[in-house]
Image 1: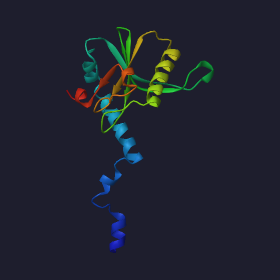
Image 2: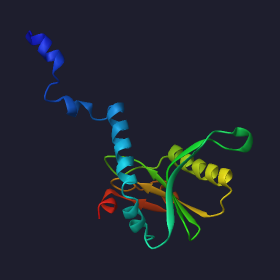
Image 3: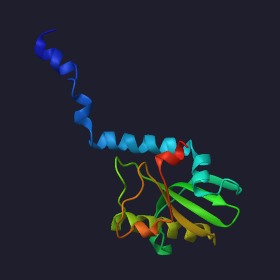
Image 4: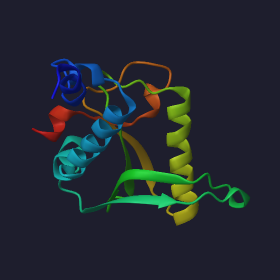
Length: 155
């Protein structure tokens, strides 16, 4: 094989560092982080201070139905507690503190609305952000009741 052909077949030593922030890598990081979170629900409950409360954990989704005011939502994790509180957990991978934008806040509020509308549940719903390094201060950070970090998952 000639030298040009060899260079086409083998990535150079900087290949992975050049892939940082590529959409495919970001998607993989997000999915991998969600998977880690789902394997650590007990630690999440401990971080929330609810490890002694009977609860069930599952994901949830609904289709859009504009006639009934339903936006269509997918919820990463719900922790439905016997004390009539539900932690709606949004898992967001970020290499730094996560910033809740106006759009992100609106998406969380729509998920809460969809869940309550579709299920008819009357529990309190706490928006819970699970992200490696916590939440950045900002206009919408106050709308998140609980934040769980990577340290919480592995404590």
